[in-house]
Image (cartoon, rainbow, N blue to C red):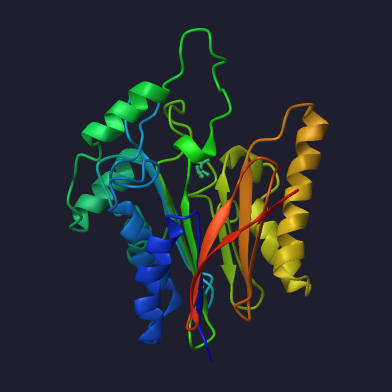
Length: 294
Ligand code: SD4
């Protein structure tokens, strides 16, 4: 059986290249997805994930992550964690070493310490400079719509391994200049990520609130369960996001969904002007694909 791994944005290439080494060695999809997320968490040039992530409105860097195993539906998540770089691995530890699914803030950091995770300063000189440059100016609307290309790109990694099992991981510093305490879609199972071997896997990136209003990733996986194609399922989720924006009378935010059906076929779709691209690795090679906008 052959494997596939996909990851959000062009920096997803770093993820799929790290993940494919594990998949080619026959390791489980979840291990590969976490390795893929970690490769981006370690990259200081990515200002929206892990080390080098941009801070909230006060400048504090708080990270969100979750993981899910499609075979067992076991999942784990952390939200609003400071000073821990490898939050996807920490989310896995929540899944494996506790009875809980989601740990928050200080509790998540204390748990990380108890599990031997090192505490780190997550800012770099460049990330502080970028935070300063892009911070809202007096007179800006309080929750201006961020530009995904500039300041909010989650890494979401979905894989099918050579045993046919699915896994997923998602890691982000969330929206730059967010309000302190704000939690987006990325650490919430069913919003930023959902994975079920019996149906497929889905994830999101972009303005998390858009996915949260429609339970985006869970919605897509339930479409896959009904036999709808990965592309049609992603397009249906974007249509729901557009409809929700119309119903509240606001312009739609930039959001992209990506999916992998249970056979390993990838697809993605996004709202207008998101400009979403994603990386795919298979035994035949690595590609960067452009999602269609709806
Ligand atoms: C959030 N979805 O916190 C995340 C941020 C991000 O691409 O993706 N972006 O809303």
